[in-house]
Amino acid sequence: MLVGLTLALLTAGCGDTGGDTGPTGDGGAADGGLADGGAADGGHADGGGSDGGGADGGGADGGGTSGVYDVPDAPIVVFWTIDALSSTAAGAVDLCGRFQSQLSGYGLDALCLQGAVTPSSWTIESHVRLFWPTHTIGEKRASITPDCEDKPYLKVIADRFGGAYFFGAENSKFGQAADLADCGGVSPWVDDADQWWITPDVTPQDQAEIPLDERPPWKAIGALLDETAKGRAATMFLNDFEAGGHMPRCWWNPDTEACTRIYELAVSLGVVDESTAPYDAFLAPGFWQDLQEYTRDDDLVTSKTLVSDFDASINEQVDGLWRDRTEPRIARLLDGLKAQGRLDDLVLVITGDHGEAPCAPQVITNERDCSHGHIPSEWTAAVPLMISPPEAAYQLIDDGWLPADGTPFSSMRISYGLTDLFTGAIPDTWPEPEPIGEATSWVCYEHTVNRNRMGMKLIGDQTMRCTAGGCGFYSWDLPIVDIEAGPRVLNRSEVSPEIMEFAESAPEYQSWFTKACMGKATD
Image (cartoon, rainbow, N blue to C red; front, side, top):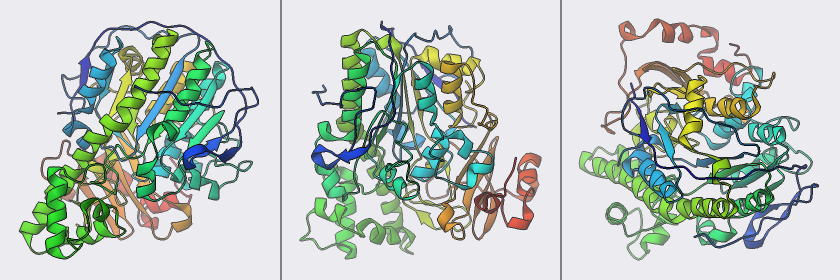
């Protein structure tokens, strides 16, 4: 069972108020090769650029909370996902401590909570269930494409205060969602946004070359600051694609210790010719897939070396890109709000959409997964959750939306909690969320339903995990200390009645996840 939350209380800032809204702008061509969102009918100006200047959430067990959060007259709510950021990697490089340290320079605080479990180990599915809770539980769960009239929770909050909603995503898959649903010519992700930016589908090499101030998060922050300068309320979604240890790895700095060892081993194994420079090798199509095969090699020395170095390369990438990508963006946001006297109006939530597995063995198949595309695990499903100011987090704990003791919970509860905190009600169309102590994380693209039926149901400290080939029962062990071993298999005699009841709820469909993907699962 997980423990605790970090109670690192610094000092508070001060702030102002305001708000306005309008319908979405159509996507157009943008500078730097970015898909750009047009200005809203409300006359919102296009977002311009300006210069920006250990253990994850560990600490004492969460006991009491302190104070009550007073909702500002014109709140600024920012929900920020770091793509492929696991609790394990965040802890390895002490992102919580670094986030708190950066905030302290602005007189702000942060609370880091453990126990969050993402609703999917795939990007689009995890986000769709966070943004539109009707897709997390209930009859819509079989579809990952929102209806165009559905409002994401950040839009619900913005509307409550007459505020604007901004969207900036580096992961190009948000733009690809337009292929699944055409909402007036744009992706369903952005048809409710006042202004939006999404990186186009480019190669990793091309994306790496896009300057920081031409990327979607930078532009979205600029647009939000234009709005908040008028004293208005605003909400914003940001997606950092690279800073979570996402593949390809080692491109940020090919000369780190782990990446140097990986390159030298790849040359010795014939995966790449020594005439190919490390940077080019790491970005070459198929390099990581070819090298991953050697993690399953009978040569245990080679396999263990690769597994260890793959893990280290994730941490190195998270460490460097948080500093080079995420921290400057945080500074840009905070510098702007500080200049406006509006730091006290800000609630900033940072989490991972899912994690990245360091070549850990998959449950059931025991094949090693060096990415995140298979059955959710402790590495891919457990994500960090950092909330500023702490008073907002305490209020969410007091209101029963989040636990204070590290008990596992579905991360979509943050969407419910923020909506309740800022609007005072949950939309009638939203079903009851999974209770604290339970979480479901699963993969079900509707157009590949016959191939993808993978998922995990967590109750307490036990799980049922399923693939198309069958299901098994496992312990839920965090933090994991042995990548080689992976989750512990449970004997039938050890399985709790709650997990067994879940397992027997849909026997005619092979697994609950198959039934859910077919649109036949009910609660």
